[in-house]
Amino acid sequence: MTDPTPQAPRGREGTDHDQWLRDEPSALGRVFAPVAGYGVTLSSIFKPTVTELYPFEKPVLMPRYHGRHQLNRYDDGLEKCVGCELCAWACPADAIYVEAASNTPEAQYSPGERYGRVYQINYLRCIFCGMCIEACPTRALTMTHEIDELVGPNRTGLIYEKQDLLAPVPDGALAAPHPMVEGTEDADYYRGAITGPTQGQVDWVRAHRPDDPTLATARPVPAPRKEAVHS
Image (cartoon, rainbow, N blue to C red; front, top):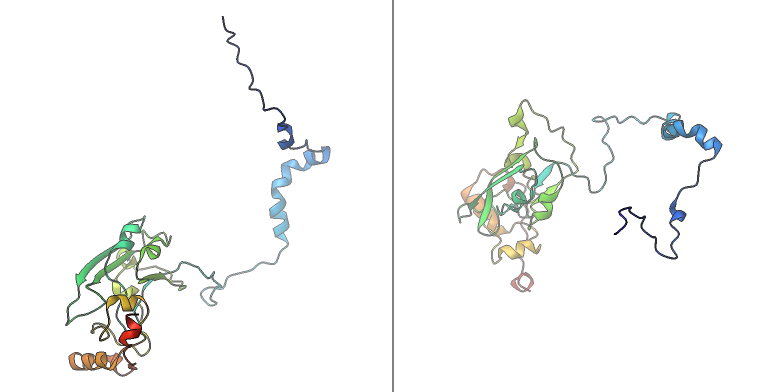
């Protein structure tokens, strides 16, 4: 008949488990133990108070601070977003809605076949985790250092539309839509071979949108050589 009384497990030979036990506090330590938790508070009481004067003085932000989102453009003005919806799939809060449309010769908004026709971010849901910008294959979506109060007159005002998120047209560039740089493919844009609008793009915008305000500030650059583009 076996003994039902459980036995304490035997420790491994040569192992001193008592070395991990804390020493018994001294008599003085036992006296001050109840107030030991106030040590941090007492050490901070006499430090000078630093008051943030936002919004009159901009705070110093960390280099990787996650602020408001931004939809970026290429140097010739075309949009980087291709409407792939990977950011919406990656968002754990389901705060992003993207609806893509096809580019046409008369309305080329981004390099390639598609662009983001509808782009919404619901800041009532957004948790600013940054997973959306990690999922973006073209670096179209980034998070800026801008501190917006992100307030509105109602709940609808916190749903940012594409026009609220789209970056300004770069200096010397043309507002979309307009054709891609002649002789290039969408992969050339992704590799950074495009440095600005060409004279052909300027002429196209002048013929189709003569009142476009970006025509006055456009600075055409030579089209990249085919050897450099496709190397």
